[in-house]
Length: 195
Image (cartoon, rainbow, N blue to C red; front, top):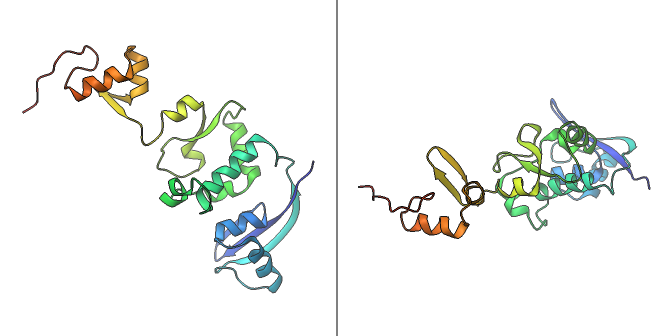
């Protein structure tokens, strides 16, 4: 099944942004998608941007997993109605301008090891979705990169509680208990309290 969309370009001064659809342009501007087409037809600016309508395009990818990942990423950052908006767009996390185009995102994904078993992960979980801050990771790797993870420091190494338990073959509950009772995490020996 082919899915066609019309490219929209927004211009303001030296800034020119291209969007794969009227909907994407509307989300970027924070307006209903029909507003973008209406501004184009009436030849008026939309939030200070000149609206240009480009050619029809198809990427044949709307039903693919990669497209859904791309659309979900943008939705979390731009749609206040999205159930996870408060943890992404609501915290100021955004999608870089070049990834407003699915084709550009797809090129990056393929060049950086995308496969059906991996998920999109931000290296800095407080950073934006952009090529320098994203990677393809397993769900286990991604879970260990969450901002609310319990972190443990042993010597100079800081790791998640799960990594520590796995590395030293100690149950997580034991590590927590040792932390709470001022015990050495590895040996369980009582530690002197610092003055």
